Image (cartoon, rainbow, N blue to C red; front, side, top):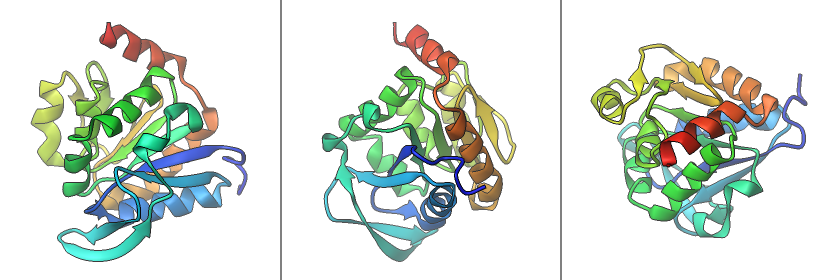
Amino acid sequence: MADELKGKRIAFLATDMVEQVELTRPWEALENAGAKLELVSIKDGEIQGFNHYDKADKFKVDKTVEEVSASDYDALVLPGGVGNPDTLRLDENAVAFVHQFFEQGKPVGAICHAPWLLIEAGVVRGRKLTSWPSLATDIKNAGGNRVDQEVVVDSGLVTSRKPDDIPAFNAKLIEEFAEGRHAEQAAKTATRSS
């Protein structure tokens, strides 16, 4: 089953303080399924991975968010870590990049604290998702329905809570990304944008 994602181009959006296993393990799973992957960030060079609060490895950035568009990719993965999505949600280009995937009905995966970026992009209202527990109030205030499950799928949006959920997260990413565009996701986003 190594070709489920053959021909698919997938972006990972991350910056410094990304939770390393939430970047590397989904990356490995999607690569093994045949996808072509690119690490997109808000800066050139390298980003610093973390193992919770401790520095880990550095990762080479393929493109900056200013150089890309959602139309360049088939799907998007948003790893967590506390500082990573918190920094990204302050960058208008990163927020716009995320929103474009929803407008175009393309599948998106977000784990741990990454739903902060979904909230900032205005794509949570009316959706069922999960996250790190501390985001529960943020998701509720943004009009989302947070549930405590290892993986949740809602019209092409795949979410998980924490590193322990990565095996389930990866399996659903491959399934949803293989399906491609989700018309209901674009419809839900268009309704909310107007």
